[in-house]
Length: 416
Ligand SMILES: [Zn+2]
Image: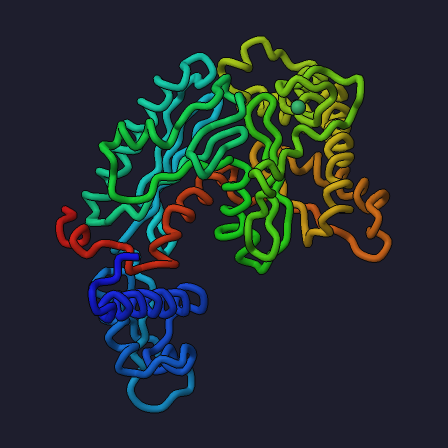
């Protein structure tokens, strides 16, 4: 412990930092409110609250607002709310066919958004990380031009990610044991803010929690993320938190075996959900040419599939129905095990929801154990495939929201 000789000042500082967090959380979670309301809600005295609010305004995390209480008599109450002009979170995403970046401020406003086409399978980790760093630098300089302090950078990666060591463990991109976070940190000259990596389905679930259906009150759900040619992952949200499991292997629904003699999966097993109902399998069943899909990404062949399904092409509609049935096999188990409030389809699965949702819903209603008493609704992510990026930016803002004292004032002064 780094307490000084008499112990006092360090304790006072940590108490103040704790109280700053308390005041921050009150406004972030419950919306604009007056100093008096914050004092009443937190049990802190009014002078302390005024001083803490003053510091949060100085750090540009809060700003004054004047919202009159409806029906109130006299002067409008001076309230404080989150400020969009202080910090921003950066999210980066590595996909099979592209790299993407998004930065949002504390109010959720987009401050930077860009994507770059790149064959990440063929490029290899060094090239991909170098280009990812270039995109990150572009995002950071855009924030600097807007006088915003970066609160953090979070990278969404396909596959199994060791979040404690910042390493991509699972070879979903043909990479294995690549220390993505360290390499990126080095490329960015060891930035002062946190730099994290995480699994894209987990970040998609967090994106859905903070920017999607979670805003309407969903707190326990399974987010199913369709990504790339073979990727199907799940992020499990329990009581508004991501459930990772002991070693971070939770949510690997793509490797649930749905057919013992099915096709070989990238993991080495046979008949995994991702191999039977992934985008590649779906397109093959629909008789859509997939020769170049692995190099060019799946967006355009999936668009062709939609077009054909809309015109009633039997190969297309049968393939979609069969895929939905196979997805249901895995989802019935998830629903039986977790009893979630809802299943959310995201990534490319969301784009096919008009065909997938009715079949999956029917299968769940017919076969999930609890279905005769309660229907688990299947809904579509409204984040248009960007749920992982939204989750990544939100996670990057995590420190600013939970420990605002960690945002260095010196950064605030020197930016720009
Ligand atoms: Zn597998």
